[in-house]
Image (cartoon, rainbow, N blue to C red; front, top):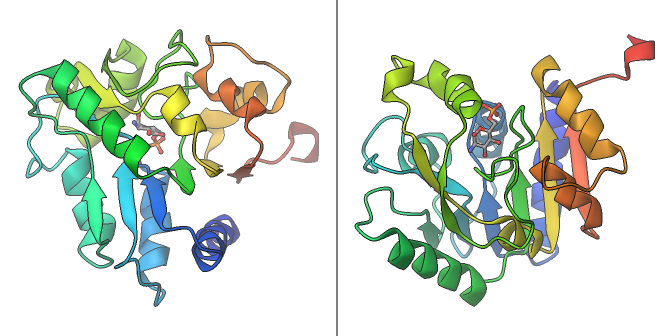
Length: 225
Ligand code: GLP
């Protein structure tokens, strides 16, 4: 497992050394050891710009389960960027907020995008059925996604029902994508991703058409276990 994160950090630093300055970042349990490892390096992101994939609707940046809080805690407090953007979970008008965020993404095209994956194949918060052509938008979270993320909250009732997320097309525009799939719970969806499937029922399968995707996993092939 340590190898996987060492490899992931090396991939990010290599992209940066090769000139990447705009980074799409992800949250979730999978990313915590990665950010911890990045913080142990002497990498300097102070001339780089970051964009997060998503944010819960209704949580302010100081709320401990907001992705803004997560990013400050796990990365930005130790490794500040020149500018870090996340959707604003408290935005009054979703249409204005999604247009604002998508506009920023188009102004600063992503050189590198980090991705986790949901058990149902979501990337960012693009739930099954999201059009591959989608841009930043407001989503209603699937019950299974709320349940999967409830472990970070005191109870499922506290998990927001909506979120803002970069769209699948917004993600696919990144020049390079690094996806981390860690833990048995991700096996089934990883198999779908690595098969030749290309279906909006499994949002991550959009990546099969991306020219530069790296997938890192701790999962062994079943017969080798
Ligand atoms: C959330 C995030 C996703 C993330 C997923 C997996 O739903 N919006 O971006 O990939 O969780 O999280 P974990 O790494 O905790 O399994």
